[in-house]
Amino acid sequence: MADSDGSKHGDIRLVITDDKITASNPQGNREMGAGTYKILGKRIDATGTDGQFSGKKYEGIFDLDGKVLKWCSANDNPNSKRPDNLQTNPQAGQFLMVLEKK
Image: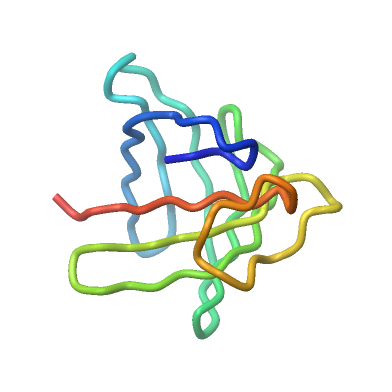
């Protein structure tokens, strides 16, 4: 995963259920937080409910191809806008996650 400033975060583990997302860092064996999400077409909007993401909102787009989910989101800055493309864009405050189902 690369953040909106282009810095790499390494592996992040996301568990996505029908109504919730939880994030952890397997290297540090540390819980990062949780949230909810809504999907409309190819848009995905997430809201943090716990941990470091609590109260933060992320507007994004996604593509699902088999076991690979590409999810590009604006960071929680009010000046950041929903991405148009599936790519990290530091100038626009947008980050891309490429997730593989295990």
